[in-house]
Length: 552
Image (cartoon, rainbow, N blue to C red; front, top):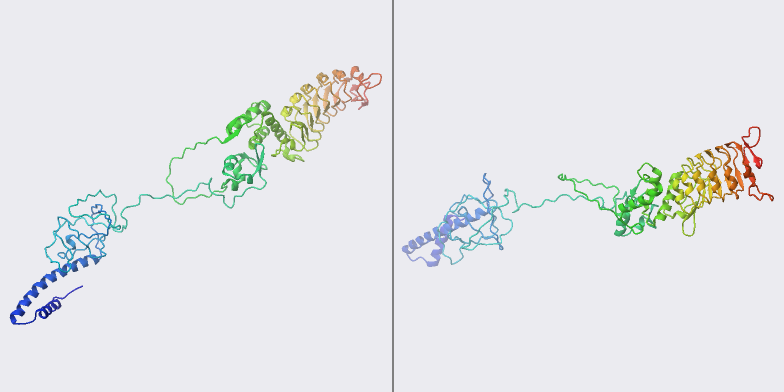
């Protein structure tokens, strides 16, 4: 707002004339003198108001080149109270305040002891024209966005801490941020599975005596218990259950974590792998490492101390089958299931014509071709005519109640294990029509409960031991169509229960002992033999026999 001197003088003189009236020239002169004095006083006060108004509305000027010395502003809890500096008074109309000062209403001045009071008069106040005391203007104030929480009163001494932040002219915050967030990296092990990850239908695994599937994993306790167990499925490599059941285990089988912000490299964390809890009361183990070692301790006396050094795939497969299941039963049951699985792997079970249930979660007594007694102890293995290959595992007689081993008409190779003599309850050993080679181990004749030995149509070689006389219960002996050499064992004459013996189509020589012929069944001799066959016929006969029923 602006006033011209002429307009204001005219206005004031008119007011005086009207108020006092004109009585004489002297009156007019005196009134004009009073009006001039009042006008001078009013004009000075008006200029002060205009100066303050202009200082609040003028645009900011470029800040000084040297960074200002900043002190923390006083803290106030009320609206800001304006404290003018000499640059804001009418005595310096060229003063331009710093951009930080913003006046939104007429300020109320709070004087300090060093400054003379300058205030906005109200009606009735006496106006003084004393100029304000000059002050140091080298440190312009910074912009304050938050209202001060403390207004000093006269006599207060205000101290400030050294500033921790120097703003630039464009700053609008009083302090810089003290925390810069880094992008969160998602842990792929706890990320919900992607749409590409689904539980594999038909996947089953055994834990203890339980046969489980993916939908058996229902609680966090189930996740902890099962999801890190290693299992195989349809010829797959050994993998954790969570790879087969990603949805049930909450496992992301295809993580795609790719942070967009580089994270400063740090030393790799030290990972402490705690043993997987695995409590097996039957074997007295508390974690999986203990369990694995205990299982090996049980099987080493059966398969040998070096059986699990990684050089024997069949025995490693059988061991892993047990470990994958987490079988937790008494050692005799552990051994039975291990040998059953080993028989499958040793005879290349994946190529059998029929392999239903084998190496499945079912009890081994429910595998096709295995028979057990009422106590679920194996007493027969019957896999006749089923395209078995490979070899007979020597551990087979660690099935303590095995009575019958029927494996004829297959393609089994290798030798007859000498450990067959450990089959103390074996009654029938039937492996004819295979590809067996090597000698007939004399240890076989330590299995004294044998009633039937059927080994024809193989490629067996060597001589026949007189230890065959140990088999006092033997009734059937078929050794024809092999490559045996030597003579028919003389000790056979003690086999009073022998009814049929076949030695033809071999390379045997010599005469059948007369004592054997004395065992033929007849009313006169009271023997048991009803059928005896050797290579005693024709001009090329290599064996002489006076009592043979058939000469080939």
